[in-house]
Picture (cartoon, rainbow, N blue to C red):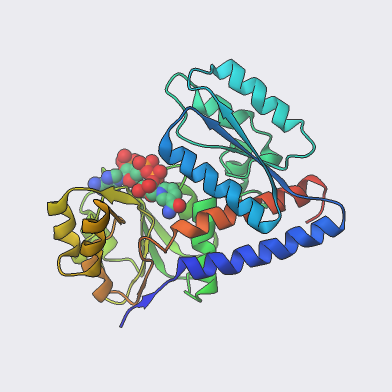
Length: 304
Ligand code: NAP
């Protein structure tokens, strides 16, 4: 029987610890503060920001949502970021991605004060991650490491394969696994014999954005599977391919769409443990954003 790695439960645990830390800081007269920058009216981005702001309220973290019109220029947005950098009530700055195409995203992310960079995207924090120095780590990979630790999944000495080399997930996850002494392979769209490379993995992490791409022929029996992908499918035939005969198909019929990760559900029977979608990696990302905001509030004051 394979074990489900319950990201919702672990995220609840992390959030209650963060709420206690925020309450402690409040007793010292400090309330950690997060600014969420939203440009335009992308509905998915609006939902993400709303959830983040709501979670702040639940944990006793101050939050400020800043909405800017879709036509804002890079220069205007840079001015806003600089204002937030100097705002003493703000410890963390989150720029919701993607930004509209006229904006130079890299310039915006690089303008965030590294001490307030709660997404861990600034080159200074990327460098700190590479060198294994303390710093703010990207939330999704940090959440995965926290899940593995709390679920007592041994990483040291294990063969870890990460599919995906993005700056947000694949690359930082590979580095964090390396720092925990896994032997790490990073795969991408040009990898030759992807299933063969993946079958070496004791720990297989899929971060591709390809619904159900990882099938049982990618997976070594008894491996641990971390599914980072979040894909919404609204085609009934495609949904049937993954969920025929399961309750998820009823879910699809009720809502007209269903979420699936990068891992085909048939893999679950082959592995020793796996993160489900939804309810696996997803909930940890917001929890780690909250953790980073509290950490940033402390780092900025020289408390470690
Ligand atoms: P991304 O920037 O699009 O990167 C995808 C990566 O997958 C790329 O490195 C790409 O290779 C690789 N890839 C794509 N197709 C492949 C194939 N057929 N074979 C091998 N490699 C392939 O995506 P991302 O931002 O890292 O996100 C990945 C997934 O995670 C998405 O579904 C996203 O929604 C999800 N996500 C979830 C959370 C969460 O909170 N759970 C957070 C962030 C992202 P190349 O580099 O060669 O193109």
